Image (tube, helix red, strand yellow):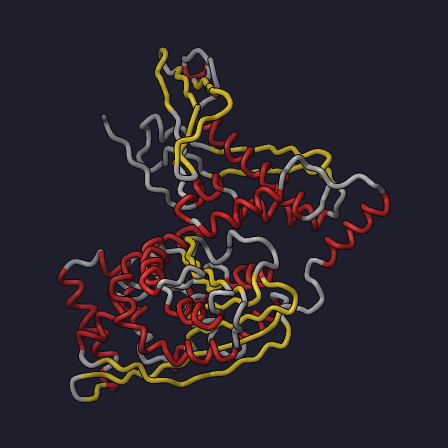
Length: 473
């Protein structure tokens, strides 16, 4: 399955599931949660990351363990899960616990910024679990600890027919690789491949207890990974999938309820004690010996770090609203103006007013008085990625000498001309090619570009769904 489609399914599916998730799954998942936390062994004062945190069931327990001298950050791809988790944290009065909306494969945190990290029953939904595990290792300090839990082998999970029952009625599979990590030693090998050491793995047989057929149905259809597909089923389809699922678990019925067998696989490991960023220290030492000039790419990393720390204590100030106005001039020629935005709790004014003319080229019978709107999209992506490279290079003590990017977007204009309804209006694809001259190896430069891509707002806007509202005042 296409990774972007998979992320959309998970994001909006768990948005749908949030109202039924805790009632349907808090108790059944508890054995895996207990074992995973035992294997992690978080300590007071530690900084811990909870990936795919959901409504915060694990994060709340970790916050109690690390105490007010520590900190816990929970992340999830579902905005509604994050909102629910934040409400739960506020209700408990836990000021050292916060939640962020982000992808497991692209966490918005600095290298080596956590003592420990967990992911409870979340890796099965990630398009590229190997990437998520590598990202987890990046975020751990040398010797930092991790623990993860996944569902076990398909044949050990009596509820597993929920996926083929749902997939038979949708155009794409909901979770095509759901049981892969729990089969054999796949999870342990994946963790080791991500660079972790001292990998330990345990398998845990369990029973999922539901007091009634209604409770069993609500858990899997409304509170779990097929919630998005289920929300689109009509009444007849819902009756059909209910009957098929209850038939698939009929052997596990006990009185009015069900005891459905399941299996969890739980693993723990460490980031290497030798600093995973050793190459950066070596480059820094070499540069220092060769020259008394400090790395200077024009980015004030200390200020950015200070802002990040301050926003962590006042997350409401991190809510920004960017703003532009656009006025029609003539034909396809328009002029956009940018002068201010809202952020840090108040209106902010730019040092200058910035104006951008947009038009179409002469081949479209226009006057070509500015770049086309789609070219501004390419400009925005290139500028965002380039700024990210400079910031990451500064943080990693890599001196840049030159950075240039070529950004190309392919488009079949039959779509915007209304010639073919099957052709989309926008780009078919975008390619960015960087040429970077820096005091670093090719691997280091590729890592700079990759990290910039992970943190790029414009890349995220282009590759993930963004709600856009167009209205008449």
